[in-house]
Length: 182
Image (tube, rainbow, N blue to C red; front, side, top):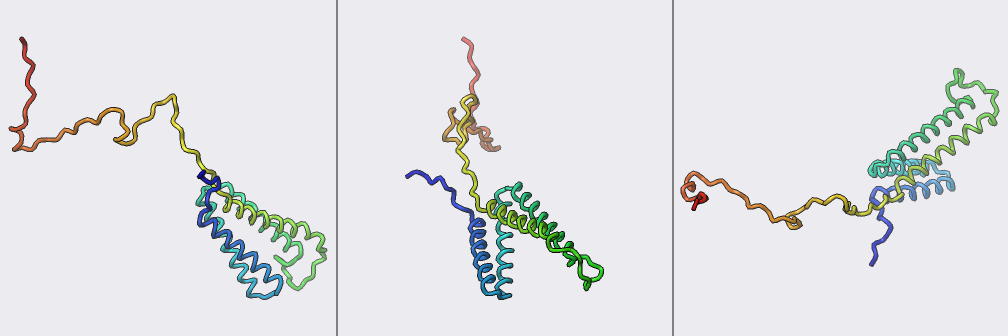
């Protein structure tokens, strides 16, 4: 039977998939019923998704994916703060004052925040679930001889191990005879 070309998912990637499913279900239930406790559970599931995805991404040494997710998360936060500032909800000296800014001026910031949030979540999901590339076994380089790795694969017989004689055994050790001249 030929080996499968699909690499099985890591545990952290499977946890990411389960958290994604839980988040989607809880968000759908929250939108349907408008219950606060379901919304809180959806936020918990979303937090679990982000943490599982980051763990999976960093465990696979995909730092460029983590950097892209961090960049789009920063863009999400920036657009959200700009949206709130344009509407006059944030950083106002007089919170009871009504601003004269129309909501049309704030719409691009809201759209930018929504798109950046979706990009962040999609980047985290893809980076965590995308399987690792299967590494092909290394083939020996024909121009370079390979070194033996174990005693059973050596080409030359192993050298005999010389042992040091003890003090009492020195007399019994035979010395090699000197060559005779004839």
